[in-house]
Length: 153
Image (cartoon, rainbow, N blue to C red):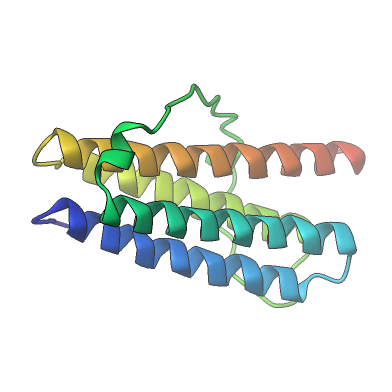
């Protein structure tokens, strides 16, 4: 993947985030348990915030300069799980696994693309995107770990 401008990067990321909004909305609609439904609904809202953040970056690229990075611990739970294929009838833990793997792949993609950044401005945007995906991955891994602990696993 090659991008000729920061605007190209941001537009690409906006499309990816919109796909994520749909993904989490679909998972939320499939859930019957209210807690699980709410979990995925919250994630769709988080992805919508990313779309807004990126659209704001397009309007004012200086906003990216103000972004505050923080240390995010990688729990590495998804690293030890195999990919699961989407199925409408999959269980809640499988839906969490699917979401974890999706965030893991997005994080890896942004890290890979950042290695090809043409300048510091592009690198900053990719690092912001990677940070946001790492944060989501950590949250889902924590939810999954807590759920499995409750189940005695």
